[in-house]
Length: 244
Image (cartoon, rainbow, N blue to C red; front, side):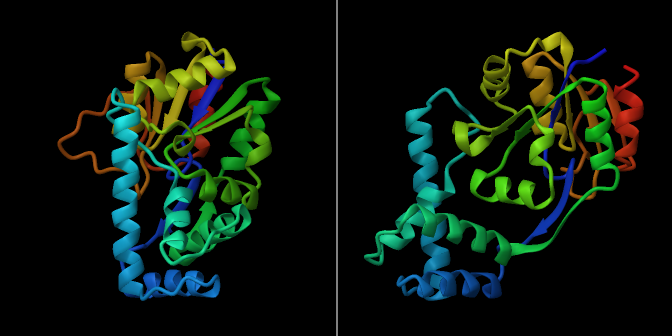
């Protein structure tokens, strides 16, 4: 019987669609910056956003040379975009910019059916619930608050905080050490065959795969897991894992 249930977030608990590709989105971003005194065209801010993000990633590789899977703090990119136009942003301005950026790209966001019942059932059974998410804290935590998820978790670890992401073994190890988890009492639940399932295998823990519309395509990939749910039905997670 497992004691520690480690969840991925997007595509596992939260169904979300975002789009940062079109001019309409980047015009909204340019308007966010313009309101705060940084005048960009939509083409200029898009170009500089990706350039600065690449620089941040290169810095991450230099400071963490043993990590193959680097993540960055997008707050640094948002801040440098302001400074490039002579604006010194406050922490509040960066936070508001991040939230506005995310809202501009989000087409919809909602919990999958059965998520709250699943989490409540685990807590009632005396289980520990953790989050291990490849995500940006500046986006993720407000969205978790909005959807009423935060209080269900005994620990939350987000890749942008650690400068590495799943399937990097060290990301899992950080979670185990921080919360004193035993591997043989832990299971990873996620929707990605690489980041979640291969990551769990590399970290030496069991795993449950749930296939969703936004999951990485499985064609040509080996699905390595202890349990699998191929129809996206979150309610089945409880059936599998509370009896395991």
